[in-house]
Length: 475
Image (cartoon, rainbow, N blue to C red; front, side, top):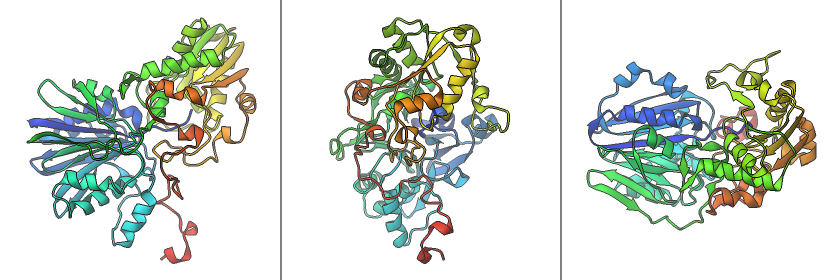
């Protein structure tokens, strides 16, 4: 598959000055799967912000000596990025910091605004000057604008949520407060936990809480704002229940780490359930069930359990390939460098291969060939998601139908193109079962969008070339 990762956010609030940058670092390390373009940490040292952010993985940007330079503080916010709006550029690294009349602010965001273009146009016409091509800066501008009218930073965010639309899980740091918020639809996950010494941690996934020894307390509810300060914890719920819950179902299929629990549902359980459904809906006569690492493994276990076909390890992933990997050209096959078939396991076998999705089909074709070259007698592909048919405007990196193979070809045509003996997808009506019956967004499969569809949803919509602009905009 070639869907890209979501972003990950972390917020830390300590009862007394501590090495909050270190806590943020380890939490971000646990969220590295959500974004590998860039990362950043901002620490609040008695109202003075110290930040480091750059392109690269968490371990590349934050060396031991770099972490040692951070002062002790009571708050920190952190971010790992995969850009779904705006290109890979240092200027788009987060957290975004703002200096304004009422104080400083550092903001980290996971998700995508569906009305970012309209809001940005409105702000620019009123004199705003943008320094990034990320929609996160739009949120920062709206909050800053509202802060001039509001009595507090949390009230400003509450007012901003009347204006911004789409997917956003936020951690925001002011000189005196740490604030986290989730959009009213709950597109993206956000949870909070607490360490034994009383430090509060907010993060995109529970795996980040576990990494810093924080016990899970609860999920932030859709539409909720949580404020951590010297006065204690305050929950603002004016936006709760104003929209139907629409958690992105792809969190269960691919984004989240399998050891995380998202909105009360263990991710590994959801994936195993997908495999069980596939075994019933799309059975195959085979000798071995294997998963494509990593997100296809639990689904393969579920398929094997229901079908009675033995589960095995047929593909090994190179765990040391990250963002800095140089994609090969010429005779070198990128898939062969990232994945290897276990010949002793698959040779002469009829194999059921489970993967989380097929987007363009090129990767799936290479994996099927990899198994055939290793001696597999048959390769039956099963996909733990329905066919991708529509763009996503909420944070999944599918911004057009142009490269979606399922938009142009039937299931049997795709089967022939990837070289599989059979092909089966998870039925769309089975998706709610993955989330335990909770409300989900499945617009990329069904086209039923919860919000108004933006006129321009391209990832690079704020980075247009002169040739793409109108004559009046070319000055």
